[in-house]
Image 1 (tube, rainbow, N blue to C red):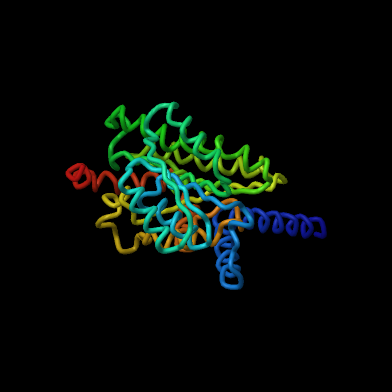
Image 2: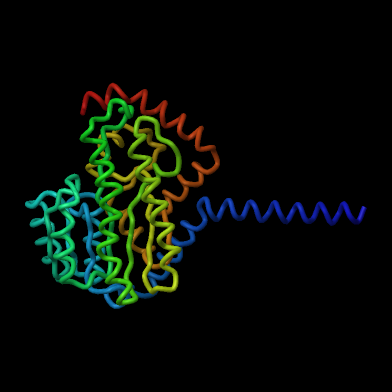
Length: 315
């Protein structure tokens, strides 16, 4: 009887430990980082320039999440280098940031869908500034609801070059300087699409699996160097890239305002290597973890299939 009691107790504690690990890896790590970041932000102002370096480089920064990262980091005293494709948008955003926050700005118009030749001028420009932060945000989303067979060669090429190659090469360019100075942070903006297969967005979701895995692996490699890496995995955020997909969704589907989302995500910088960015996204992650990846993929596949005529009409 005593042996059975000991065995039962042992299995109970093993079960408790397993549940704790599932909760922590599934959503608690992100939630605790958000709570800690919010509390610390209320109690004291984070001094990003002193902690990381004077300049933040943000890719895909003329719209959406990238632009909001640029604005929120400028509010915290960071000088901003904007890197995106459209020159007139970059000029307008740079002027607005300087006017509103009184920081220095630079900009560089780069089409990341082009070949490796684009990285030489980037390397030269970035060598002249102390890059304390890199926000790898640039990305490409093919028309949702298209199967892989229906994706154009141009879309496939753009996903690989913007979502995979750009993140990798930009990190490779700035990391040596950060390591020499023993400070800095790389922020990889991934996606919740990397948690499970997404029928109708297969290549996009696969590219985000790479971004997430690359960021988390790099964070471990950089331990003890003074340089950090954070992976951010947004769920549905209202941006120009996702606007067609997020229209007419169920009211139960939480689509966050981009400014609100990034403001919360910036509070987690330096607090955790992985975050959903916002507590509402953490709740969504909890639901994803309750059901299996295959069931999540099935539900999303059905949803996209139902909306396919509407989405293709707007293409």
